[in-house]
Image 1: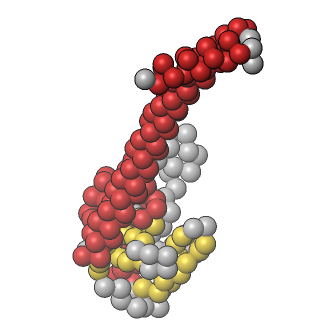
Image 2: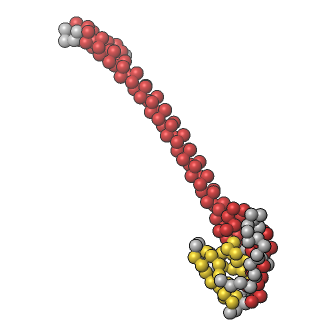
Image 3: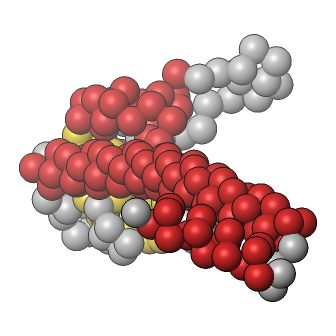
Amino acid sequence: MKKQIMSSLRDQLLKSGVASKKQHQQARTQKKKQKKQGVDAQAEQRKRLDEERKQQIERDKELNRKLETERAEKEKQAQIRQIIQTNTIKREDGENSYSFVDNKKIKKWYLADNQVEELSKGRLALAKLGDEEYALISGKVAEKLAERLADEADKYLLVSNKGKQEEVDEDDPYADYQIPDDLMW
């Protein structure tokens, strides 16, 4: 019914001379173009929305990976802290100072003679619990932590002399001169 009214209106405009045949054709083609552009615009909008969804999914996946890595790192640090805390050996205050390096700063602990000797021989090790917290642990626990941590061992184990004593360079001119265990610096 609409078509009949529209076409009759067009026909009436053509007959009355208000509109020419050329204008009539232009109006029809323009209407078709607008209709087609509307379809094209909708398709383009769908494509753009699909792209945005894909990008959002990728961002979400990347964020999930980062969160998972952070969670795993926190879990690992908590396990290490727990291992150190459960295997902490009580520090005996003494007159001998034992110096060690933490974050390029030299720290000093006063320990009993036997603990200084145990540290220098590798039977005890010094581990880092927090920013300014340190703990004495057994050498065997330190070895297990070093194996577990691999390349991050220096971050938690500040003094572990077991592995250091065994490393001797063949070309070292001072290899024959061992450093005495009772040397204090």
